[in-house]
Amino acid sequence: MKFVAQRVLCAELTVNGEPVSEIGRGLVVFFGIKRGDGEQQAEKCAEKLANLRVFEDGAGKMNLSVKEVGGEILFVSQFTLYGDARKGNRPSFTEAERPERAEALYGYAADCLRAQDVPVKTGVFGADMKIAQTNDGPVTILYEV
Image (cartoon, rainbow, N blue to C red; front, side, top):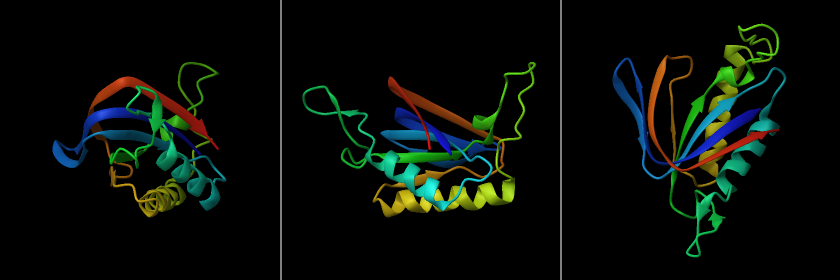
């Protein structure tokens, strides 16, 4: 599994022009699931996200987590994180998990985040989503387990 986490001031996710989820201060997380990933990887990603110290403390140091600042997470499934563009110009997605299994693990990872006392909003698995966000910093973190 891998994720791209971006610190934001706010974000909104829509599907077919209709609002689905929105957050204030927090993280927008694009979450990819690789073939063979399981619950253990999802738990590790959730723990990392909940405790990732990317928010500034009173001294201006990135020393606080999304939990500590009372932030939220917009959690978006994104199979294209496992796109391989090393050969040719069209990415191959053979490393991405099958949709049925990926959807279950995406839901499980979101539940693991909620169990860490982090407010989580989600996208719509498999939908054509539009995301508007105001990045803060910008701060972008890549993580793979």
